[in-house]
Length: 483
Image 1 (cartoon, one colour):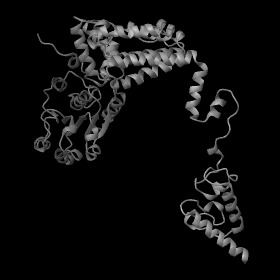
Image 2 (cartoon, rainbow, N blue to C red; image 1 turned 90 degrees about the horizontal axis):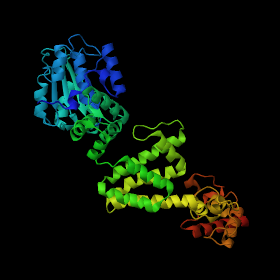
Image 3 (tube, rainbow, N blue to C red; image 1 turned 120 degrees about the horizontal axis):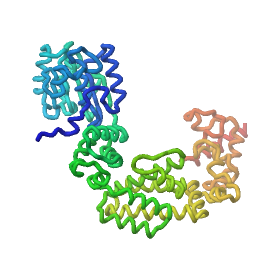
Image 4 (tube, rainbow, N blue to C red; image 1 turned 120 degrees about the vertical axis):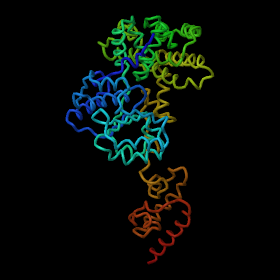
């Protein structure tokens, strides 16, 4: 018995059947309706987002027997042959298997000939980034000035590997990842047409596991129907994907709200019998906390198929907004650092201990928490830390009392009171100030090099050789006094 996979059976055949990619659909439809169709298109994006599908729909629009139009009829011989992959004027090339320059030259030798049956000869080159550098060079001239009956449709998942000379000759369309909600809605429509029983929560899990790829979602759906014996249920989806039941995640969230450390450790240990993916457990916990935070911020937030509004309302009342944010950050940071743990179970248990410890500090250690925050804000400035806790006002730090300018400028140091700077004695400072006053507007060495006013006291520098400069100032002050 022949069976066609869902990914092939439910491939869109018109622009109106596309899911997402509105920016690409609108541009192509307007170009077809106005008759301004470019000769080369480049479609980029991750796997399973519709690059080849859009290229085939565009080929049907160009070669439909009813004329060039934005919506092909779908019933003429050209449309049916393109859908079946038998149209002679749609040349699909797998660049991953034809990377050599000889293959490209053989392909371009037939460009000059008119199409056999259709209106245009369309070259659909998939994974075009796999071509060699010589193949790209051989393609450049034809790609820039093809015959009027030729259209190039290029598709790639890695546009960074394409030469700039190729990118400049094509209209580029970057296809986005599909939202999980759109994927779930498409899966629901397909299962209703296929008359397969399903659970909305199970479809949501499949859509999330697809990671923005519709083809991955349909392949997982095929696997789920086979795994569930003709049914796409939530329990079957969790068993197939290796995720734990929502009840365990809810139990963890409730124990966090109750600050029950012993029960939280026991719940974490009880997950071992299911052999879960602890990274996915942390992902689901973080997703639940996001919904709880949304419920706290938006009173009429109704949730989704995974969590009922009553459950979110109960957790929103049991947890403070600060604790929700704290637990969420702990979950995502623990998810990031999970590969660094000795094993996933130990890393997951460490996240739970961290959350309990931070929760106790925020709940019962008010003064201790304030002191911790104060130290983080000001470091070792104890006076400002006391000001944060409501004590005496903090004095202005020493670095703020110094005048602006280079740290070794003579004016910046001499402006301090005598003996104020720890690197110089008060007597030396007073002597230098007196020399400056006696020298008046005399030229200070180094002033021209720094481009400053020769009479300004900041032009001199107490760096290396400051003793020699001071001696020259003394001699100059003596000559001016004798005169």
